[in-house]
Length: 245
Image (tube, rainbow, N blue to C red; front, side, top):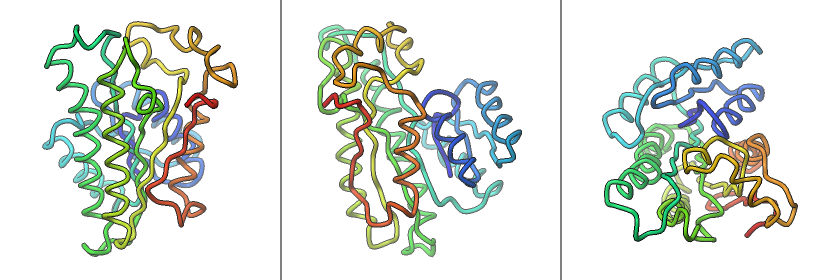
């Protein structure tokens, strides 16, 4: 399994859970090698198998190199989690410049497309593979729009929803299932990147369950979609949002 952006948050939680379930896990990171190595060491210390793979998913050359390293170190990929994503600081659209928009879309959207492409080349029965599963990380923001804060992020996740549906249909006969998880407000440090570390606590009263979610709760949904228990599920979405829709 390759999990992009897995040095922290939902990606790290998914890596640990996957390793505990017996997957060999490749933990992709862009900048924080120390955090990625800590996740690797935790997995290895618990008896699992994991490696760290550097790469900026928005850069095609990095993605190709990352998959080549994965081929060499762990063998043929069978599961991909497109988790890498970013927020810029909270702003209205009128305050956003093209540099911000391009950066958000290049990582959140282009990165997911590039990784799915390389995974499909290896998994597809059309290309001699044995099939597999892809889970994309969307967001409940794709439905809510994130006005006055992150309309660019919300739009990027709307693109992920469309990609999930289209790719699921494109790859279904080739043995590859494609699904997505839409987290709601989850306790991760991505909110600090957006300029408000305490955002979950501010908004949790708007959630029907009256609390923020935990990374492990999202990871459980991801692992189910990747597993054989979801063998007849493709092009589908699980909202992990405490009822906030």
